[in-house]
Image 1 (tube, helix red, strand yellow):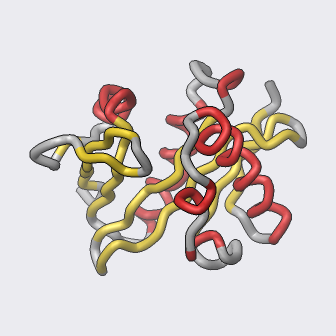
Image 2: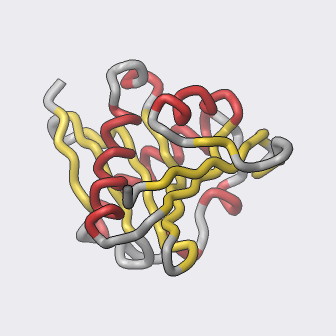
Amino acid sequence: MNIKTLAATSKEHLEQCLQVRMEVFVKEQQVPVELEIDEFDASWEACRHFLLLDSDRPVAAARYRMYDENTAKLQRIAVLAAYRGFGLGRRIIEVMENEIRSLGVGFIILDGQTHAESFYRKLGYVTVSDEPFLDAGIWHVRMKKRVDA
C-alpha cells in the first residue's frame, strides 16, 4: 500500500470522499443516501473533509465540523472493507485530531456505531451517552475525548 493522507481542497477531493462513503454507508450498511449526504457535503469548504488514497484510489474518508466553540465533532469515518485492519481508521482520526488540537479546541465528540465503540476507546474516547441510540437505523453511542491537555 502507498497511502497518502490529505485534507480536501477541491471538488474532486470531495467527490472521492463521497465515493468512499457511498460504498461503506449506502451500499454496505444500507443507509439511505438522503440521510448520508447533508449540508456539510455541499462543498469541500462546508466542513473539513479528509481522504486517504492508495496511490490514486480513494480508500478512506472522514470529516469534522465545529460542534460548539470548544468542541469539534468527527463524522462519517469510513474505510473500504478491503482496507480495514491496516490502521487507516486510526490514521485518519489522528490527522483530524492533530488539526483540531492545533486550533486550540479542547474536546472532540463523535457518534460511533456500537460495533466500533472498542476501537474508539483504544484511541482515548469515552462513552458519554447513557444509552445507545439509533441514527440512520444503526445503533450508535456518543463518545468524547479531551485533546487540549
